Length: 135
Length: 149
Image 1: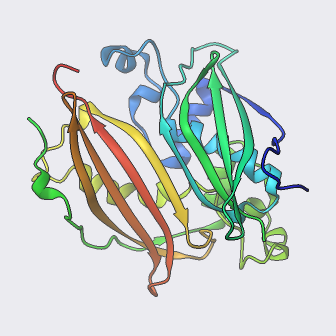
Image 2: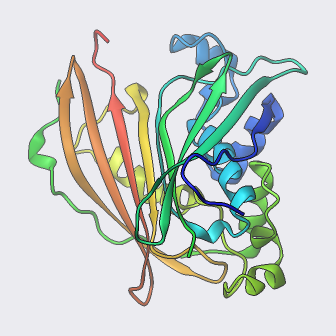
C-alpha cells in the first residue's frame, strides 16, 4: 500500500433508498421526519425527503476505512454539509459517488485524505477530509 | 431574534454514561453499509490491536445525541429548533470508540456568530470514559436560519 501524496483511493458508489434512510434513522436515533416524511420535507421547502447529512458523511467514511484496513487509524474526520441528497420514493433512490485522494503528509505519522461525495453531478459534502495514521 | 453571544463558553453538566455495545456498533455499521471486520468481528479487531470491536468514525454522533439535544432545547438559549440545519461536523478521535466503553459527554458552546441573518452555533462535545480518559472530541456547527433566510 502506498500513502504517497497524490494516491487516489478506490472509488465507492452507494445507492441510498428510502429504506436506507429509515434504517439509519433507527440506528442513529435521528428521527427528524424530513428524512422519511415527504409532507414534512415539502412543508419546510425541500423538494422531497433528504438523506441525513450524517448518513452521507458516514457512507463517505467507508472509502477511507476500506482503503486503510483498520478504521481505527482515522484520527480525525470532518466536513461541511453543502447540499442535500434528495431521495425519491422509488427503486432507484439516490446515487452518491465517493472519491478520495491523499493530499498531504502532515509529518506526524498521519496523512490528510480529501474526500468528495457527489450526487446528481454536484458535491454534497464540502471540504470533507480525514486525517489517517499511517505509522 | 439573534442568539445572545453571552452563551459563548457555557458548559453543560456531564451526561449519564453511554454503554457502547457490540450490537449497537453492528447495527450502526449495517445501517451505513460498512463491512470492515474491525466493526463486526472481535477477533479481527483484536488482531488490529483493539480491545474489542471499534465503532465507525461517525458513531460518536449517537453517543452525543442526548447531550446535543440538551443544548438545542436549553430554554435559556431560545434556539428555534424548527429552523436548525446541520452546518458542519468534525470528530477528533483520541482513540477509537470501542465496545465495552462507558462514555460520558460534556457539551460546551464554543462560538455563536451571525451572518446574513443566520446564527451559527458551534457546540463542542468532549467524550471521555467514566474513568476520565479522553476518547473523542465532536464539534457540530448548527445554522439557525433567520426569519427572512
